[in-house]
Structures are given as structure tokens and as C-alpha cells.
Image (cartoon, rainbow, N blue to C red):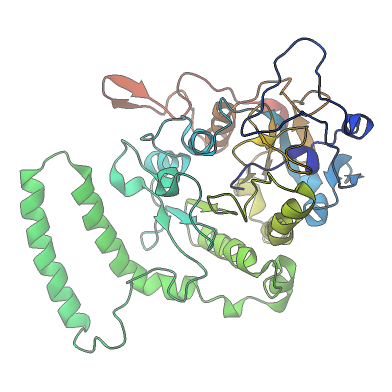
Length: 417
């Protein structure tokens, strides 16, 4: 969820904020209270949304997420994650690559590198951004970094009439046929082999060659993958496929499930583009801006969990819901919230986690984490559930044995089966 989801308005119920609403925020122990982008006065802001307990586990969930509330017994929460930064780009890098600096491989690339391809006709790592635009860092969130280039994410615009661009020649190019395409590939193969012999060790050309070979195979597999007309009306209703607010995100969730069924290893679906509006970066008015986003994703995400479960796929599919940081317990302007790397919420479903559980907590205001769960811990859990020891998955780069979790990370077993 790109932009920084407000935890105290979604999953982290903080009734003390209602008691202190409008008063100056003061933790009472001398700690410095800072504003990230400009929150004069530091006046406590209560959540404008009602919270209720749901499921057998009694998880508190805001009224803006009624559908996710219905599946809380399938979810395992990390209730007090934190980020070392309050800046979108750096925090997004932290969540996707384990580092705040650019140039490091993202989670999907590490998984592709470690586990390889299941389906030879589809990429092992596919990214579906928000149709309104790429997230902060643009393609940097999907990079293979210093891993071989072929492990980078394949970006697909699911809302486009041609989601995989240039997969087929345009209708007016009548001179292109199967024979001419094969002849072109043969010529390219000779040129590429000659170039590769002059640049040993450069993975970029190898990745380009493999991508061209993959595209040739995708000409057979992609039309079937994206043909969702055969999905039942029950499935379309479950995800909200035919509803105005949910249609786009629902389509991407359905496609994500179809990709998993066909052996795509890692699927990443983004909500919210980069920039100051139409994402989860709710600086101006949490009361209007947050529901605008939750209406788009709440039903499709809950639908995905229910659909995977009904098909027997949830037990070996790990679903991760996360964001780059949380929001502040005090107001920005009249009713917005500023960035807060101090604490935020992530949850998992399926894939070996224990539903209805939670680990950690934030302080009474939702200002700081009391448990100190990090992105490295999240990555360690994900790799563990995929059968990978995060301390053993290393690549030598510039004299250093690099890994996704750097020199940190622990598998939090409290939320595992």
C-alpha cells in the first residue's frame, strides 16, 4: 500500500487518542516530538472511524475495512513494525530491498534467484503497479540490483488493453508473420552471441536474450492467462470485479491468483502511485482520503484470501499486506496525519502462518513501536516460510557477502504454525 497507511485508523486501535483529542501531544518523558513535513502544534487527533472487534481472535479493525475484518482469523499481524526513515523513497526501498539506499536486489529478485522458475512460459516475478502510476522509486522497487538482471520484476499494466506491450505485432504490420519473426530471432541470436563473447560477465545481455525467448513463449501463454471472461459470476462478485470502486484492484487480484495457479513464483500488486495525492499518503484529511483508498482494495483483498482458501491454495500461498511506514497520532493541518516511521502494521495470510495471531505492539498513542519489529524480520519470516534460511542466502558483491536481511533479522515464530 504505497504512501504509508495510517495504522491507528485501520488495525491499531488507540482509544486514548479520543480522550486526548485536541490536546498537545506530549509523551511525558522528555522525548523529542518531531514533525516530518510540517505539523505545527502537535495536537492529538483521534481516529474519525469506529473500531470493533472481529473474529474468534477479537482483532480490532476500523469500519473502513469491513471486508478484511471478516477474514481476521486467517491473518497473522506484526503490530509494531518500524522504519529507520520517514521519507517515502527510502522507506519503500527498505521494505522492498532491506536497505534504504538504491542498488540492492528486491525481495522478489532474491526469491527468483534462490528458487528459480516453475513455469517456463511465464516470468517468475511479476509486478502489477497502480494504473495511476508507478510508486515512489519507480522501477527501483522491482530491481535485481547486483543479482543477474533476469531476476528483476516484469512489470505488467493490467488495466491496459495490451497489458504486455509489444507482445504481438500491430494489426497494420501485415508483413510480419511466423517465418519473418523466426528469421529475426535467428539474426538476433547470431548478433547477441557475438556481443556476449566480447563482454563476458555482463548479465544484461544474457537477460535481454532470455527476455526475448520468454516473450516468444509468452505469446502462447499470456492470452490464456489474461482471459478472465471464464471466471464465474460468483468469483467476480467476491472480488468486486464489476464494481466501480473495486474493479481495477479486483482484476489485478484475480490475475494474481491466476498467475500463482500457473506457476509464477512471486506476484506483487501495488495500490497507490507516487506523489502527493490518490495514494495512502493522507496529509490533508484522513476522514476523506483514507476511505477513498480502502474502498478500492478492501473487498478485493478479502476476496483473494477467501478465494485462495476455497481452492485449497492458501496453505501454500503466502499473502503479505504491508506499507512503507505509518502515520502520526497528532494532526497535520486540520485533519491529516504526517509520516511516522516509528510504528506501522503488516499482516500475513496462509503459507504457514497461524491465523488469528499477532506479535508486538505500539505504545498507547501509536507513536512508537514497543517491540522493534523491522523490515529485516519481515523478510526473514518470508524467506523462512519459503524454505530459505535468510542467513545462508548470500551473494558476494564488492568483497561483501550480501543478503536481503543485511546482518539483521529474526524469524518471529509467535505467528507461525
